[in-house]
Image (tube, rainbow, N blue to C red):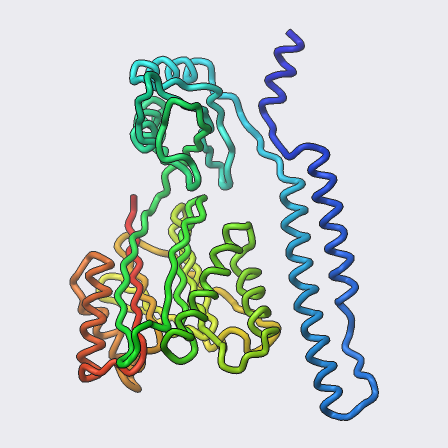
Length: 391
């Protein structure tokens, strides 16, 4: 009896091994120490103006390194101390789930609950099929949703298909909202490559992050610069960095490079599909428009592009979303096409749009921008539209 209780207790928590935890914490301490060794006040040595400027630049580079090391140490510490608490599924529900899915050819093992933020619970279980058949995880999630009387969907990162070999699956509670995106682009005349790029990151936990970057100038170099920014942002967000830390690291990396011509913009819309809200962050990006029926709100911030200063603070602007809202992100080429009064002109144009598909809205707005510029594409144009609906 005591052995059985001990086994159940062990199943309720999971964390990295003690050896791995000690190593991670040791690495984190080392990074903290290195960060402190770089984090000193600037005290110029004797010398002329050029010498002091060189010393200042070296000091700023050390501050950048210090910040990066501290952020890495923070992530290592969080990973070392992370504990996942599992709650065993009730015996009656476990039997119902196992028997019902067995009739559908799916073998279920070790179903548990995994608590999430805000009181939500995910379902963790191992599934496999018999006789070499394959079943999509969406179909399996639909069956489990009916059996448990809960709306569940596969979490980001879970396998797509239930196969003969047993695999672990995480099924999250479905979000209260769903978001669809659509984009339209036009490349500057006499160029073959757009300097604008965009990315959509589904990092799980009910969050979708849409990013738009406009490289300095146009053409292949600008496109490469903006693509690099988005690639770095995606990798850091997937590695566990929060958005603000990722922005600062990309910014300081560009600042340290010391290139006067490489200052891409970065426009971010981070949507919480559980709470139905969004946070907008702009690093030199053009205004974002929030369309709610015929009402349009313009959200703009006066930040400079990336890489101008070594340190920067980007304050997010938060908005509560409603069923049927649209968020419209644009690059500078679209703003320039509508002229000096673009705020009022674009707001009026967006308010009158009757399309419902984000892709159709983006294409419609691009056509209107081209008409407003007399058919001339003087700069790269990119329009991203995010539609939000109650699930």
